[in-house]
Image (cartoon, rainbow, N blue to C red; front, top):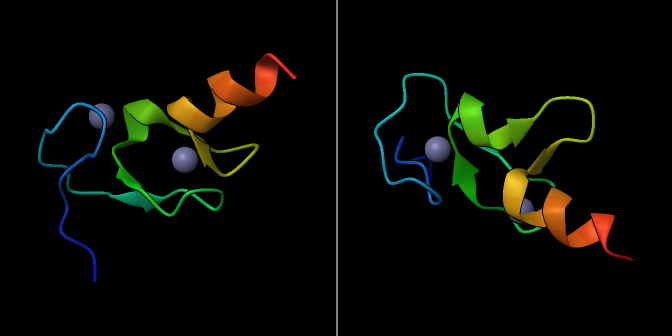
Length: 48
Ligand SMILES: [Zn+2]
Ligand SMILES: [Zn+2]
């Protein structure tokens, strides 16, 4: 189910994306197209 609310910033988005890693719904701003991950997961993986 896609709510259209970004789970990071909480803003409503017309083009919600779901993170392939954690499944969170995020807006374009918080989604990385090349990795398919939200910015939370992307930042986490940077440290590994
Ligand atoms: Zn957002
Ligand atoms: Zn994620």
